[in-house]
Amino acid sequence: MFEKKIFYLLFIFPILIYSQKGETINHIYEGNKEADSEKYSEAEIKYRKALSISPEETKALYNLGNTHFNDKNFDEASQRFFQTQKFSKDKTEKHMAFHNMGNVFMKKKDYAKAVESYKNALRNNPKDDQTRYNYALAKELLENENQKNENKDDNEDKQNKDDKNKKDENKDKDGENKEDDKKNKDGENKEDDKKNKDKDQKKNSKKNKDDSSKKKNEQNQKRKPGQISPEQIKSILEAMNNQEKNVQKKINAKKVKGSPVKNVKDW
Image (tube, rainbow, N blue to C red; front, side, top):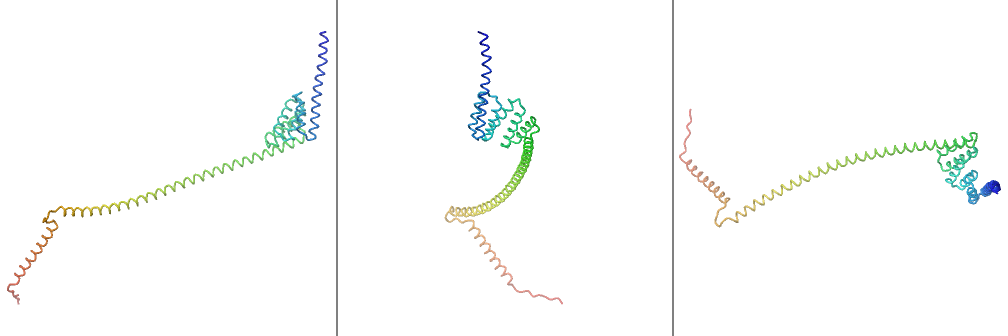
């Protein structure tokens, strides 16, 4: 009885494997038909059914990658091509997977990764003319991009340098303007100080005169009735001196009026 069970299992297991393999191939075949009709969504469903049975089935992975590529889903396509070359033991499949990965990166304008992918494809099939052409094209585009970036960097450096020089010039100009403003302001302040000083002097002079007049008025107001002011005393003294001089003149005039003296000539 035990031997019969072992025989049954050994007999059934290959049938199951063959059945799963056949189902996987059938889904891939149906997916190819949908892809040829450009029904990419339906094709994707068939390929995913195949992978649900055999997750490392390289043909399903590769064809699913092509379906994503044609549907412009480049990120998914790149992932499926990467899985294809990872699980495949066949150089032809590896070459095709790397070649299509290069095509994905060319579409994304990632020329550095495209060059690397085509290089890996050529390692598995150095004689493929299309891969060699794509590899050379990707290298040329990468070199042009690098040159363009270098020129851009040079232009940015030049622009930054020009901006810095312009900024320094503006800074110097601002410094000169500030210095001129300071000089003008100092000159204006000095002129204002001079005007204010002259104004203060005039004001003080007028104040002194006013104070003098006020003082005289106060003295006059404080003088008692009948009291002679210093000015009046000065005037009286001057009048007395003048009167005295007049009297002296009269006295002298009278002295001169005596008998005239004759002059004697000497012969």
